[in-house]
Amino acid sequence: MIVDSHHHFWNPGERKYPWMGPELNAIRRPFSPDDLAPIAANAGVERTVLVQTVASVAETVEFLAVASRHPLIGGVVGWVDLTDADVAPTIDGLRSGEGGDKLVGVRHQVHDEPDPDWLRRDDVQRGLAAVEAAGLAYDLLVRTRELPAAHRAATWHPNLRFVIDHAGKPRIADGARDTEWEGAMVAMAALPNVTCKLSGLVTEAGSETWTQEQLEPYIRRVLDWFGPERCMFGSDWPVCLLAAGYSEVIDTIRKVAGEDEDVFARTATRVYGLKS
Image (cartoon, rainbow, N blue to C red; front, side, top):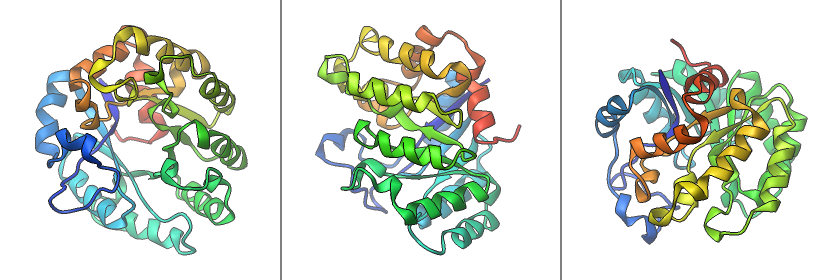
């Protein structure tokens, strides 16, 4: 069984996506379960984790409703305002609504915050405590700049399951070895409550110009630092389509990690508490 721990749906005709600039025009169209289902089946993917795309509780409500109707979607990583004093009731409301049992985590676009120490703020800490109390995971959408604050947050909340998205977005396209990213990720890997997604790397390598040789050192380092039991495959579909097809992304990870059951299913199932 393969679990895809990271993908999205969106519809630019119905919602604005602030991060979707002109460089993403190729994927500026609706993507839905009907688009994903056949390619996931063809790739042998049996379950997925649907991840938020905007800072919107309404989107999370929609995603949970979609997940309730599609068995392929094993879980939803949604969005809540961590800085809101009423974050705990908001989480409770999501869990009591349609598809609420499929809420498995929370995410915020931390790398878009002006403050690199956003994750250290007192109000954010209160929000993370609410996520922990709800038994959910917290996805870290960060770059190297935010990893020190992410490390502090993960240290302050040792019982909260943190998941680094897209391997912390190393600067693969720059060509030079990203030693700053390496140091920050080694520190994250030393924390037992942190896992890492092998996702989004084809686009970090420069869209259509990427090669397997470019990605392999980064994939191997993450696997060495965290171990397969704390790594999980994610397609980052449909963003990945800027650089590679769905099956090609899976094959890229497989060429380095092999058929490891932790990477391709068990880690995501355990960390997100996906039901069988």
